[in-house]
Each structure stands twice: as C-alpha cells, then as structure tokens.
Image (cartoon, rainbow, N blue to C red; front, side, top):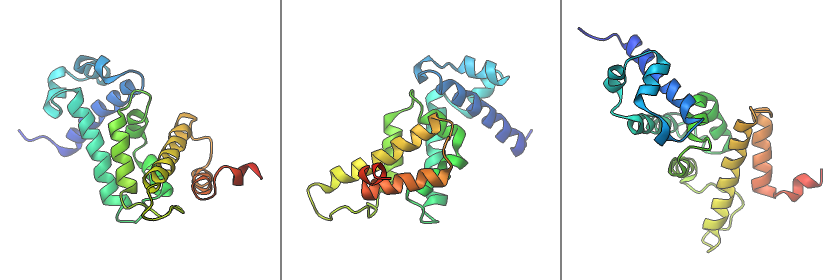
Length: 179
C-alpha cells in the first residue's frame, strides 16, 4: 500500500510542529519520542517512520533551513539582513525553536556562515587583521537583533528592523543616539 504524499507531509509536519513547541521550552535532552508522539496524536512507531530519534528530527529541520537558504536567499542574492528577515518569515516555526534559548549554537554559526560566507561589504577594511573581528561583530549583531525581535513578538515592522540593523552596521550606535 502506497502512502499519499499529502498525508505523509501532514504527519511529518505535525511531528515537527510538536517538536518545535517542545524545543522552544526545554533542552533537546529532555524531549522524548513518546512525548512528541503523544502531543501530536500519533504512535511512537509513526514517529520512527520519519525520524530515527529527536536528534534526527533536529538535523532534518536544520538541513531544511539551510536548503531553503540555498534555494531562495542565495538565488535572489538576499544574503543581507533583509534576506535573513525573509527567512524568518518563511521558516518562522523552525527558527523560533532553533534560535530559542535551548537552540544549538553550532546551528547559529552555520546560519551565519550561509548568509555571510562571501564577506559582505559593511564598511570593513579589506585584508586587515581586524577584518574577521569586524565581520563577526556585524554578523553577530544582526543575528542578535533578529533573535531579540523574534522574542519580542516582532514588535517592529520588518523594514524598520532592517533599517536599524543596516544603520548600526554601517554607522554605529552613535548615529542613532543623535536622532
């Protein structure tokens, strides 16, 4: 008997949704397959048809986001804070969980490399010993502000957040304090 793709995708997504909810609330070590199965309304055996364990599910989500970036953000040349905001809109559920307090710092580092691997020009001197430090400062600042925006229930319009990040990266905090 063949599975119907719509049902398969719906079941997988239900398991992922429950995992995201749990991962936003507690560390992965405290999440069990049984808990995911119970909350999603499926049996443990159904979970194992899609994933080997919770870490496999986490890898699936991380890879899905990285694939999304490759397919969308890079093709549109949106590897700037605005591209990151687009990603946050499209993959909000995943990112809310992955970038929560219980998220994995290695994933955040992968995400930063994906968006900034080509060392975007943010008024940074080329071929300087300071360049890696300045890049890390700018990239980390952008991601931290986006995570704060997410935690604050997106209390600013995305365009305003993008302008804030752009201003901070290119002109520093003093340009905002003067306003």
